[in-house]
Image (cartoon, rainbow, N blue to C red; front, side, top):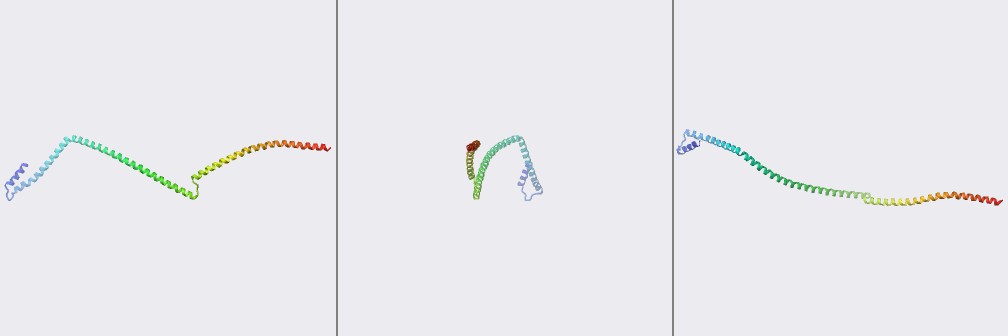
Length: 194
């Protein structure tokens, strides 16, 4: 078909009549469909050739692509792990800083609250911890002193009843002696009176 196209072009160039005959129009009208069909045929053949080549080289190409993909995946994993560790470190650092700030803020808030409560208690006349502790020490000292004083009179009191009991025992003897003595005297007086 390529040869008929060339001969048709030569024929039109060499004999260039002013008017084209009807059969020449038919030949030119047939040429464009032939060139489109020829182009389609060439495209089809190129596709079949590419398919054949892809089929023949497909396994090698597939293996090569797998190797390239594995290399890219490995480098991507390495990059991702380094970035992940960097991000993890940054997040941990940020979390630690946030935790420390929160603790500091909480401590300050607690201190302010304690100060305000202490001032309110002082205004109300409520004794503080130090006042209660010193008062407790004084009470302990007074309790010890009282116990010491109570134990000393108890010893004296224990000795005193013993002396009184001994005196009571001795007293009846004296009374017995004294009762005999006046009786003797009375008898002596009555004997003298005779």
